[in-house]
Image (cartoon, rainbow, N blue to C red):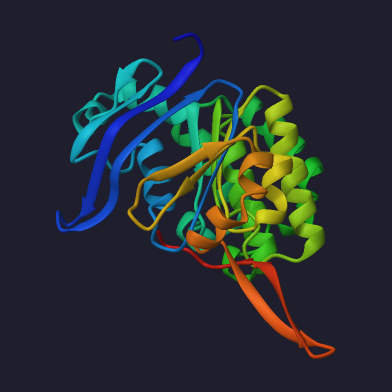
Length: 271
């Protein structure tokens, strides 16, 4: 298929071989698409993103990336590994996992240095990201001294520095203030306009319509229970309620009971 980047067929994965995390997942992702994964805690969203980034591999079924099957052994081939890491970048949900250098600047340039990007090109990319993210004042600081929002910006910057074709972002707005959330959404949209494929996992249903072409809903069975346009998914309150993405809140007013759907926002997800 033209422009097919990822192809998953009947994918199963269990942690330690006994804790199921993905159970029969089928998904195709094409170049330039904006894909959003939603689902309750523990439904398999983060596991899927880690698999797309080549960090874990199916126990059963197959995953192909750029026309080649992803297997652990392939990453022992330096050329394959280097090529894949240049094309695919993951922003982890927990920024502390991603930031480990003494200074912010060292963290941001670490990836391209490992991928043997030239010094002049690294400087060009760094200058560009400093202006886009307004992080000049953070460069000489230690990552552990930053706020949650600042860490998220730096983590995204360190991934964008690789200039990947595919940007995978796990819970990009979790715990952030509205202004920082806006900046990160704008950055994802700009990356997509520049031709990048954007794959996002989120609990924040408020941002889904803006950042998505296709939405996949993961259910309690750790498989995709529905996919569709953001409008189709967000208008299906029964689907969202059954899969613990909204809850129905009741209250009494003038002697009558009223029920309204409430979104689940800003959760922390390890699933």
